Image 1 (cartoon, rainbow, N blue to C red):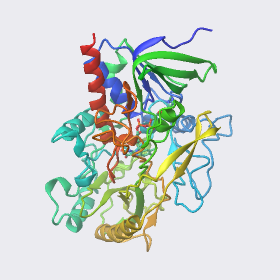
Image 2 (spheres, helix red, strand yellow):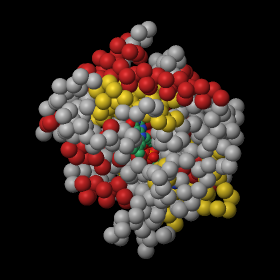
Image 3 (cartoon, helix red, strand yellow):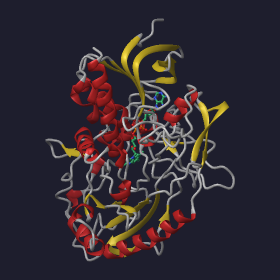
Length: 510
Ligand code: FAD
């Protein structure tokens, strides 16, 4: 049987989430003659490929798309078994699957609900789409003055970020005003309470359309005759020749056959746990690989908005997955108040939906505060030389410990969330709830960027791996700072810079 893969391309991209898609998009725009192959281990579950599953109007079809994203054990033979290990304590969000073993070593805190998505579009076919910019110590200084902002603007363009999709939400202003009264004092304009920038827009019929990798790829990539996306294709190894990246070994999951595809540049964008896994499996093992793993611990609290006049029932979300009563409100991270606040209707938050109030639908709001981790090199993902995961790749073990500082930040966050909640309305519970570690789905640091090859970073500010020329890494693992804000916009921004670097090298070597 002949292979469906090309023998040679200019750029091989591993992973079709927003970070990989950003490379394909910028290369299509800036180096339109370059041949690009994108490999994705999961299936195509939406149309156009990579589209957010919330845009699928039919609930059964949407549920099936989520299920098919839930990894190597997911199957739908009538029993609809999605992902793996779902217990009361360890639950995966729809469209994701949990790390089966190795999520917690005895005596450590671990990341009990560390999760993945395997589908064209990656986790961004299932995400909430919050795209805040990093602030204060979340920012990445090593890119140079002003550079990060320009890249973030590009990231917003690629992700289709807007702030007005929920403009007409009846309760949005009330929530923002009450939060602002409680939180804005002493904050600069940039860090005041505001609408959350979201990767969503309204189509001509007024319906919300959530951005996934389809939006990042855009027509320019889909129409690029030199770009091909291969789904159900597991990259098992980065090929190395003469001290350079030289391509990838890929297994066609439809046939089980393995092939080699030569490439001048390889971009690994397989999420913050599977990108280091692929490097490790390829024998590329710099000291910082898998280290500085960090997740944003999440504290949640629910309140009923005080003194509400019932809003128009037409604000119901229907199939869009997010109530349109108040949209999403952002309380930015600052070094003084080191939490990222995301306030939204409960059906879009990880808090269990409280019973609806027939008198005032949409009156229950979930507050979430994400905390930045105290970074430690010892927090890491390790890979096994013998044991394998469901895809046959090196099995992972997560080493993860909270520090005394982390626990102090959580205590502060708990007090702050109650204060903010009370400003909006009446709490549903006495105490805030801490989500199991890993629930944020924002794992970072494992292929972190650094200014120099000093053992504390894996890649350069261009995202090129120090240890191997021509190999680029992408995704949240590249972020070197401890962020509390949702990281995808930042990852896409960093990807823009890496992609520009590849485009410029391709153009100068023509
Ligand atoms: P991913 O989207 O995970 O994509 C990586 C892809 O690579 C996967 O499809 C995977 O199958 C593939 N892959 C891995 N290894 C291989 C291999 N060896 N060969 C071939 N393919 C491979 N983030 C935000 O910023 N804001 C939010 O509001 C937000 N909300 C979220 C809500 C939910 C329910 C979920 C699930 C996630 C949310 N996230 C949010 C996280 C966000 O989706 C991720 O940060 C983002 O998708 C990361 O992009 P990525 O391209 O780096 O990785």
